[in-house]
Length: 53
Image (cartoon, rainbow, N blue to C red; front, side, top):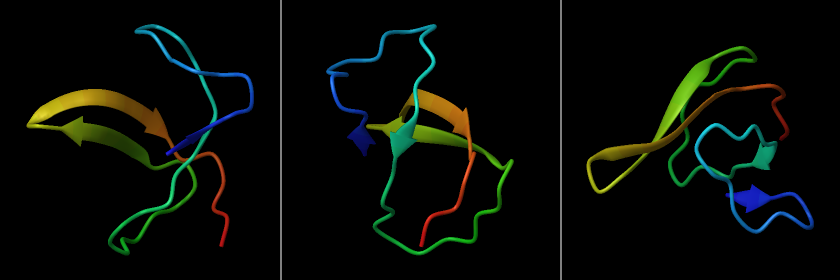
């Protein structure tokens, strides 16, 4: 996960744009909702805005 330049932390309720490189390939489409989980807990959620290859 790469945050935009100048952004160090995102707090609950904040909106942000991220670049994410997946470890394992998975089918994703623009508009798809996703969750980011760590240690069995959801730590983030969002919507795919753009696919970059």
